Length: 91
Image (tube, rainbow, N blue to C red; front, side, top):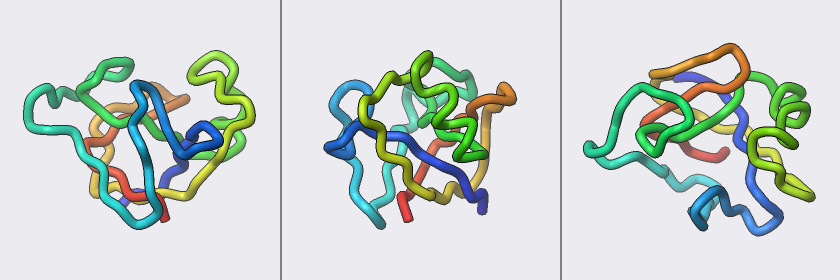
């Protein structure tokens, strides 16, 4: 299990109006799953809360942003700034 961070807007929504809730597992359907960042094939998250806040203006630009601890079964993509997972739960 990977412990990560997830940014949302003030209403706990992310790109495309995806609504997040504490304790609810969000996952990518088998199609279009692929281990490539910046696609709809993964859910984006961060390893470090400071990195999440630092890159918010160029990644999501939530103002104000909400930051949550999150858990994922496995990381399937990682570029050093953000990572991608197929399932994520805000804790």
